[in-house]
Length: 223
Image 1 (cartoon, one colour):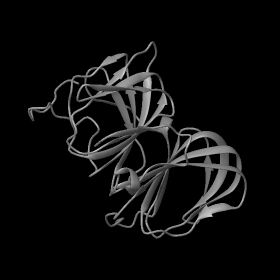
Image 2: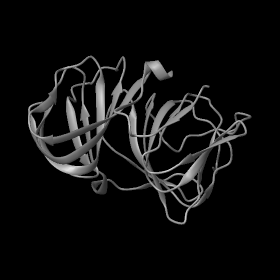
Image 3: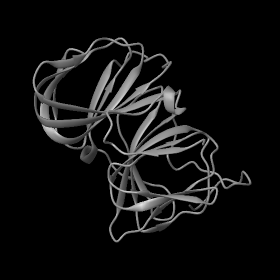
Image 4: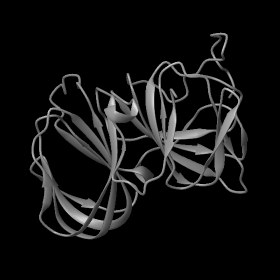
């Protein structure tokens, strides 16, 4: 199987053992203080799913609340100084590109203007990272036509209910569902409503979440 859907009941969702060599996607949970990570060879992008906390990111203080996105460049460290039921979605980006002097970033999703994709879909680009793009996508009810991307992507469903359709197979999606989509895999994401679906995506090489192609290779003007 060249694609996979997981639930967030496990701490490590995707990695090389599940055919995802570009990333390791995981859920980190903290309650208290003193937890942290030593400098690593990977870039890391994180997003606060729930709870609250304070942290030190590359030597700088940061407040963590739902909707906060964090970038930590390879070679930098971070720690959680205090936490109250804090849940982070972390994606380690393997073999990162040079950071170009940007060692870390902290961005609130509400601080970023939304951009329009197609078919009524919107997205917000989050922390800057040369190696990958992190974004939140907003999907109205409905099903997209089959399409593919030229990037490798891991997706986490933040809210809503729907289905992922690939090669005649369908898998139910709900909040907490996680998806790995290899580059050029033809797929379709459906929001079954009644409300908006929100997804958190990380993909590489970096670019625009709106870039997509129909199965015949034609750029998708709508999907």
